Image 1 (tube, chains in turn blue, red):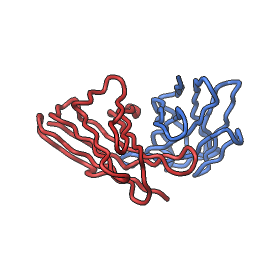
Image 2 (cartoon, helix red, strand yellow; image 1 turned 30 degrees about the vertical axis):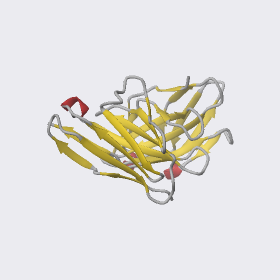
Image 3 (tube, chains in turn brown, cyan; image 1 turned 60 degrees about the vertical axis):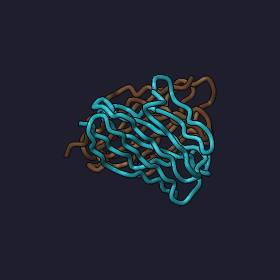
Image 4 (cartoon, helix red, strand yellow; image 1 turned 120 degrees about the horizontal axis):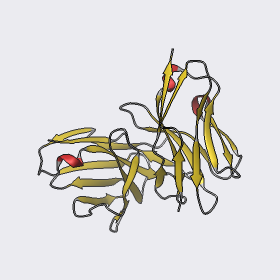
Length: 113
Length: 115
């Protein structure tokens, strides 16, 4: 069975500093992995996805994630945080194409000026 | 891009009443839709898979008689919370798979408050 574990429930950074949100996955086969962001009172937005192509995935708003099979990790990074990045971030794994997604517990990112 | 809408976005109801939430794919067809529930400060939990033309598939622990799902057409799935109670208060989100590989489109969610 697939699952994801987000290692930090809350991450606080200063504006302009790097962001690292950690995610480990468990899967019996090569998974599809995603990062979604949820801003307060708004819908989920896909940041990026990994589907067995390049292991370094670039997403929107300057975010990127690297799939590391040896470490079963899919950490989300951004070189320089912006105030607008403050939101809830979910690491997500797919059972298989076209099926429901399995969400991690989420990481709240706070950005201070 | 593809859009999924939900209606209503907010609903407040009295305990014991039923509430219907609609999920529509606006510019694409979806033979399958997914319903999630998100409690405050928690993650999304899959409740059920809605299948056009057949019965929904419910996740373990979800009462199918309480959460009625009807996939009426290729663009509409409805979730009815029957005899709602305060513990059903939550944020309900639907999604539909798109044509592109591993693409899912999420609705904006419906916030339900049962008094």
